[in-house]
Amino acid sequence: MLAQVEGERGIAAVASSGDIQIGGIRVDVSGKNADEARESGWKLAQRLGWEKLKGPKISDSQLESMVSAIVIEHEQIGPRRYVATLGVIFDRSRAGGLLGAGGPVEHSAPMLLVPVLYSGGTQTVFEVRNPWQRAWAEYQAGASAIDYVRPSGAGGDSLLLTFGQTERRSRAWWRNILDEFGAADVLMAIARVERQWPGGPVKGTFTARYGPDNRFLESFTLRADSENDLPAMYQKALARFDSIYTGALNRGLLKPDPTLVAQNAQIDPVLAALLAAGRNADAVDALLDPAASLPGAAAPPPVSVAAATYTVQFASPDASAVDSALATVRSTAGVQGAATSSIAIGGTSVMKVTFAGGIEELAAALRARGWQVVVGNNALSIRR
Image 1 (spheres, rainbow, N blue to C red):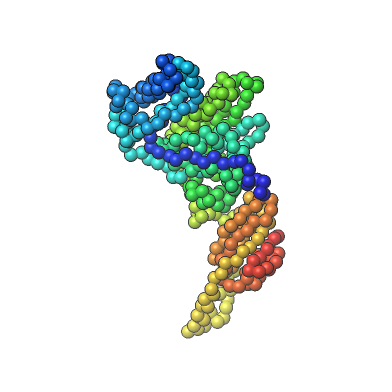
Image 2 (cartoon, rainbow, N blue to C red):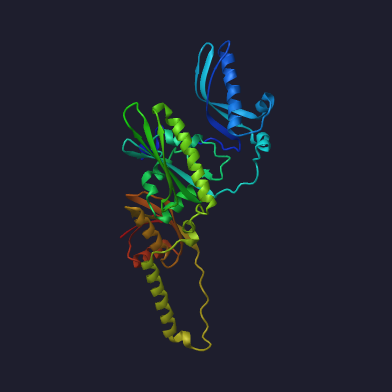
């Protein structure tokens, strides 16, 4: 477990701002010396970036006052020459008025982003640092209509968010993960990278999916001439992904799944039928009870029992076992609430159970539901 959590992993996402960023600007200029050539290259990048935004004609001094930063994507500096690929970040508060931007924009609910990279026959999310994860971490999403929740991938993130998790349908499992990251729903950004030959062109197939059911939105293909062009290809892919997700939001597809809300959770139909049968049997017993039919017979006052919280361990070979255990315990008489505090697929998971009574009474109630129960110090271990 320590080996899976420790190690060199995790890339913190950049702070999002509403500034306008233009990347991929290529410049090739000369000057009397290296510093002058570099300064000329940066000024040219500012002008080219402004032209990409289709802004009106303004003076160099006005343009420079609206630039927040120059991003160096790649540069080569010679004694009198400067060749580089740059990005320019414009201050939205200053440039927005000239560009007609800055009005109200509809934003999505917080969406957990899971970046999946297919490369070399493996599927990677946060197990190791990878360029696809880095591209999303460095993406400036402040101007996007999508509220991306981007985990760093450090600590236990690499255990919770894996490629296998994207194919699970368990609502209880997804609710726990989304609550952990403060998100309402999930987006999957999948990149499949195929290298034609070592050092040769690279084909990237990108697929946008969303929701706990892993629903397909759109797919597209990009190409990089060499390994060095991969970062630029990823940047283009990010812009396409954001456009796809924004379009889905405008079409009403990215609404949070109501089944991910705990109040809307559905019990297994078999368990629901058993609960209904039990309630019907209790109603019949009440009708047949002679004491209940006597006129003037006063019902005994209800006895209030203080509720307590107990730790319950249970085997969880797969996600469906977690759902089944939670549903059964929640439907046990006297149980006021149950929620997982630790999940270990293929091992032993832990839930906290709030019960109106003592631990021995809880053990008896669980045995009545078919569990084998071992009583410990304020804790139970149950198995089928």
